[in-house]
Image (cartoon, rainbow, N blue to C red; front, side):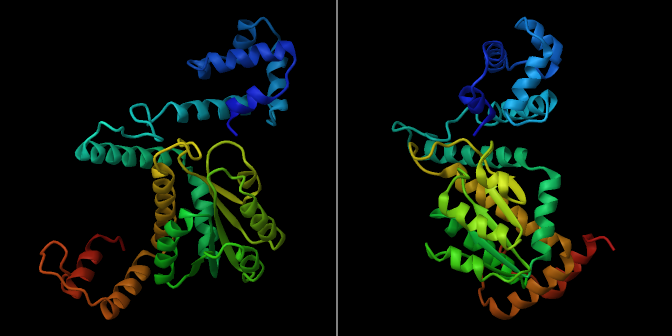
Amino acid sequence: MLIQEKMQQTSFSSSEQQVVDYLLTHTEGLHEQTIKEIANQVYTHPSTLIRIAKKMGYTGWKELKEAYIEEITYLTSHFSSIDANFPFDQSDGVMSIASKIGTLQKMTIDDTLSLLHHDDLQKAKQYLLRAETIKVFGGNANTLISQDFALKMSRLGKSASVSTTFGEGLYETYNLPENSCAILISYTGENRYMLEILAVLKERKIPVIALTSIGTNQLAEKSDCVLRMTTRERLYSKIGSFTINNSICYLLDVLYSCVFGEHYRKNFDHVFKVSQKVDNRSSTSEIIREKNPQDVLHELDSWIPN
């Protein structure tokens, strides 16, 4: 749930409601206003704002203000020129559709990147590095997207897999080795099945990385680490889950790349040597044809710092 939504659904006194109405309608320049200045605008005492913050679940006004401004900044960025639910219309030709979907995907990456924070990403990376087994849980299309991530991690020598059989997730959760890490993917963060899996993982003290939407939800509140996906689409009144799928794919690619980068040369040598033995593809195209293996390694050595 977004802070704006929670403000509209929380019960406030008449004086508190005046402040809330002001916050909802005067978002521009809010970051420059002090608590006293806002209180003066609605003829109330600054303590009213502190009471509002605590009713909203924050420790004080400063924490609520920072979170609210971050939410406003996100919601007013990146998607000003295109609707994530209806990125094209019936009058668009094929090239117009192609252009708009391309624009949508670029916006989605920028949007998701803006939600990433160093400490959260670093924590997720450490969980994955320490884990002997990585298990991904998601629903519907999320499982298909996650399979590419599991495949890439497996090629690094990591035991990674995706729960693909509905109803088996709880069994798989109970059977995970102690030194495991789980990735749970849910747009709403309120999927009952995901929350049941989360409860077992917490009981077994297995670290959980959540990929979910912005705002408060049960998955985000109870997971050990949260990475936010782009949050622009409605649940089903849309043409397709373009931004959600692209955002999940991007976040999983980032996680894989962070793990790969921890032991860059070692991981590349492993993937490269195995691929030489098992990948028998060839091409007449100069662009995609493989170089001599020694030339590849020499090129790599030339730009990897000692």
